Amino acid sequence: MLIHPDTAAVLAYLRELQDRLTDALEAVDSVARFREDGWDRGGERGLHGEGRSRILRDGAVFEQAGINFSHVSGERLPPSATAQRPELTGCGFEAMGVSLVVHPHNPYAPTSHANVRFFSATKGSAERVWWFGGGFDLTPYYGFEEDCIHWHCTARAACEPFGPEVHPRFKQDCDKYFFLKHRHEPRGIGGLFFDDLNAGGFDRCFALIRSVGDHFWPAYQPIIERRSHCLYGEREREFQLYRRGRYVEFNLVYDRGTLFGLQSGGRTESILMSLPPRVRWEYDWQPEPGSPEARLYDVFLKPRDWLTADSETLK
Image (cartoon, rainbow, N blue to C red; front, top):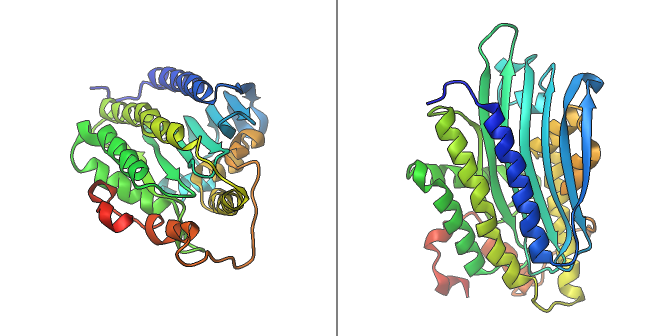
């Protein structure tokens, strides 16, 4: 078992994962292709590193999709990284990761996000501290029970080789993390979320984040293929744009990755690629009781165990 982290192996996996997800999304969209912007930070604002930002716009299926790879190091961890780990204040750091966000055209097709990342920090001559983080989550606008069950079954399968306690913990942490406190509602139906992962050593933790990264596409592909051809009209589109506002609010107010990127002096265009290209807000809007829009709030935007969902109660 490796005691010290093999960063070269992590970097190789992250680059390969970005390539694999790029190919998969282009195959589903069938029309648009990703634009790639390579970037390099040669010491600007104390930040070193490089990355590949890939953006797909106005495709047949995806209104916008982004897949970013980054590898950066700096002299001082930003506040968003030390809020949970105050003992690392003032530490130099190295961070690498892949982050994906997809915003489909069709309101019946959910937005989705995935991320796997690795951090390490050092303070003077002290021993290096490292940890992994990541997960994936789903944000539907019109919910479907079979989609939710499949999503969470695949999330559980990603965690199963690492012990029966892993999936329930990661699911609970996801429900807790992707919660808009100012709205008193979850962003979507959850999935997996973890941070500060280093228990059991590097080999185990690296295998776990590879499993999470590798299970994202099997979780999302059948859902996007089922829903991207559903018929919809202006009503559904307007509701999708309204609910996208919640996505924007979360990412700009709470998301640790967004805050870390902005506070550390990262590339702004790459950091904000997670935001949808079109969105709207409406003052004090409420769904009509009994409507499909109300059902999103009444049934799907509630933390629940989708693996034991009672289909009769959701019809």
